[in-house]
Image 1 (spheres, rainbow, N blue to C red):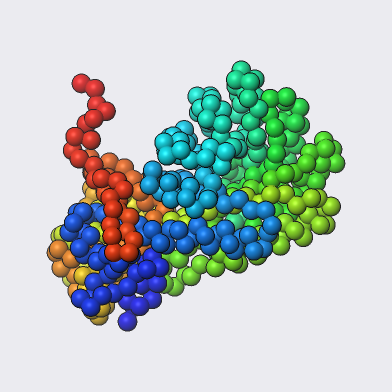
Image 2: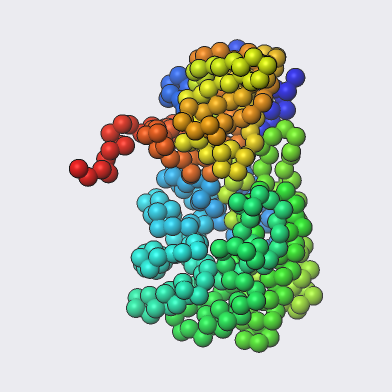
Length: 437
């Protein structure tokens, strides 16, 4: 039976109770759906905190000076930002909006790294006003704007230059970011001028280099190759301009397991590989070891989040397919429609029953492409059943929309049998709040 391996895709505290119900963080998923409504996103606080600690411990074991900076684009709200602050992580933000969430909970701004390929002058000004710890400069346009703003405000920010190392990360083209044909970062062939320009500016303090080669990387070789390429560049910049590499930010992209047939590498595998590549290359090039910065996002929150839906209409097409529709879909999880992401599922109220029928899980939105899972074997599904889809903590809520004027779902955090609401469900009045008539 498949229910046992599928359970491993859910948060670490997940189990099946005597009623055959899925339990997350000590809370019955069926009861959660009844109490808070569906669609509902459930986050396991113990799983979240455990991943934060695991990244710090495993990378710290292999490398002396490491900063773990959570990539907020995967998902961020005030409760999660508070938890990350408590766990001692920094924050990688890509907009003034994400930065404002951090600021609203008094997140230590010196631990905030500001990314983005087209930051506006207003956003950069805000980062300077709030003393963001690092600004990761993506292009010459931004380099000039930032230097001018820093001069106006009389504050010298610490900056990193984002480098595109030109390495294929072997992942989906939509989440590949470090190749030559990418909108992100300075190409190696032209980055030397950026280093020269940043070092020459009295209003900028160039402390390091950044790279992020893609997401959902199941292999470590692309990291190793990228590290070698970027450190070779750093060595050339030291020889030519006296540039001292104080920080090397290798980004994120660490994979998680979405389906039973594709396990992800243990965090320790990434940590050992990346640390060895840096240490070996620095020794070869006679460079001092820089501070290592990593930016996990999905790999911190992905497994901790579970989406709960209630089944509604069921459509049988004899000899073709059985569509089981749920009360959510591409408005709260666009990943399957966007880049054919794969998921598993359990019926939370029938978790111990035999997987006897093949179904396709359809969303409720008016698009033929609104399919969450195609062809999965589950127990006989009926209207009113609660479907639980694991590994929904990353990029589902962050990319959610009001398509078809849908209400964005509520979010709860669970721990030790207690559930607390961390985002209320939207109301119909929320849909028109910004309208001007």
